Image (cartoon, rainbow, N blue to C red; front, top):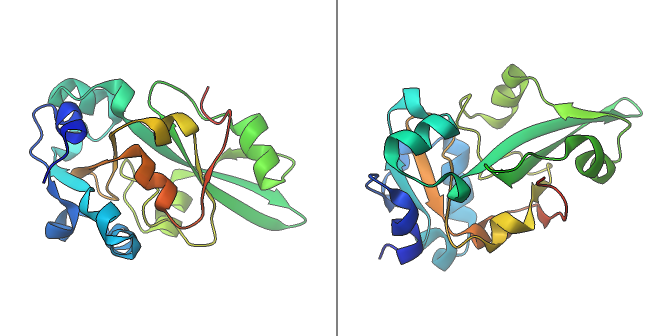
Length: 186
C-alpha cells in the first residue's frame, strides 16, 4: 500500500514498490533495499522518470514534486595520514551539506571536499545524477541531516538517472552505517 506521505510528494509520478521494479534500480541499491527490515523496504517506492530530468530542480519542476521533500546525496572525501576517507551525506534539497566544518570533523580529516564525480560513480556503482545513500560502500558512514529523518517522505536517487526512490525519511536511519549528524544541512 502506498503511504499518504509518499503520494503527497509524488506529483505526477506513478510510484510502485521498489523491489517489484528492480530494473529501475542500480545493483547496489537493490542489495541495500533487500538488506533492510521487510517493513522498511516495503515502504520504499520507485518511479520511472525522464533521465534528462534527474537533477533535483528540473525533476521537481517537471513532476510537481516539492523541493522541500527532495533529499540530495553527495559523496565527500578527505585524507588523513595517507588514508582516503569517504562519506555519503544526505541533506534536504533546500539546504547544503556543511562539508568544511561538520563533515570534515566527523571524518577526522584536515580538509574535506566533494569527491570527483568520476570517482564517486566508480566507487558507488551508480550513475552521475543518481547517487543515493542506498547501496554506498559498507565502509562509508551515511551521514544524514536530522531534518531528512524527520520528513515523512523524501525523494532520493535510485542509483540510475531513469528513476527516483520515494522513501520515508526515517528509512535512511535504517541503512547500514547511517548516523544522524546535527548541523549537516545548512
